[in-house]
Image 1 (cartoon, rainbow, N blue to C red):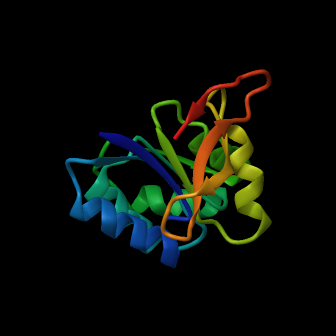
Image 2: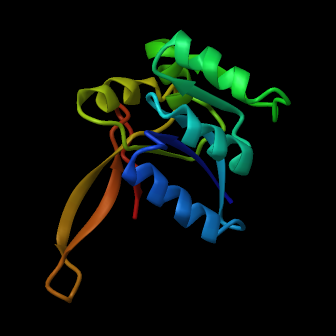
Length: 147
């Protein structure tokens, strides 16, 4: 089972990713979510997927979300840039989907404490006219390839 974090869970990409997770409950579990201001949709996502931690854009929206969830499902609610970084760095996550708008999503992806980060590389053709993509670790000095 893959443990998934979604940054931007209330946007179109995040909502579609959660649709895939909903359709495949034996393959995926939501560990953490991050959203902007749409606390109504985030509340529904928390109630359905029961993530360990979520984050919203600021403390005001965090207070509103906490008030909407009087019987807490065991989800920690964070806010602001620090909250987004915490969500992006949740150690239990195998996969982090960054679906946040603009540069905000890039800034919060820097929180992958100790996890391997990968870059695509190209090694020829797959026989169907498409380039083969494997993933080489970009950890300094690591030569492992995971295709």
